[in-house]
Image (spheres, rainbow, N blue to C red):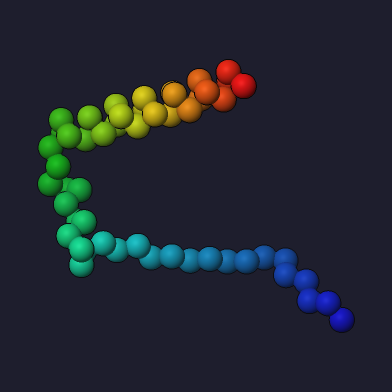
Length: 53
């Protein structure tokens, strides 16, 4: 008799305090804006590449 799996639940907890990655609260607004701008540029490039295909 085959076993049928209807649902798979994956739960992950991500913490990066041991490696010093908890510095997001201390970043300046200029740094955050630069990161957002870079992300927006990359997303727009990806969308542009998809529409050219």
